[in-house]
Amino acid sequence: MPASDPALAGAAAVALTGLAEAYRPRPVTPLMPWRDPHRLVKPYVVTARGRQWDDQMVDSARATATRQLEFDDAMGSVGLAVVVLHLGDDGVYLVVQSWAKDFQSRLSIFSGMDVDDLRPAPIGAAPCVWELEVLSHERAAYVTHILGNGVDVDAWLDDALDTRPQPRRGAIPSGT
Image (cartoon, rainbow, N blue to C red; front, side, top):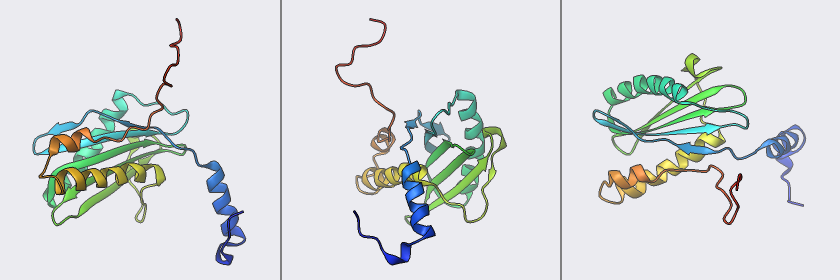
């Protein structure tokens, strides 16, 4: 049994146990990069169990993200960005991160009950564990391919996180 810290006794321990029991990985699907004038965007979709996405949802999310990215451009973006459309259990979230000057990034979050209802998230909202999985990968890809490798944009675009379940090796396809 792991040692527990007395500071995390009672309600905090119960809350952490409940979170740990409820957590399940969610598939991350990379989409084709968005190539806009003066900007490259790596888009992703994260889905909770039972949630489905389609091109119309992505188009709607792209329109919201583009408005934010245009603002980010005016604030000093370097032209590379990541967008995460997350279809969660309790709503839809859109995380827009653009890389900026001086090793900084700009992060904006939108939320709503539907992709057509996205609004800026309340002040203080931050990415959840599933969105942070994508952002963590993208931070490493940015450092590796842009900052540490002579600005290799093609390698950065190719370095996409994909956690969708893969068919098992040797499995016989259904219908044969």
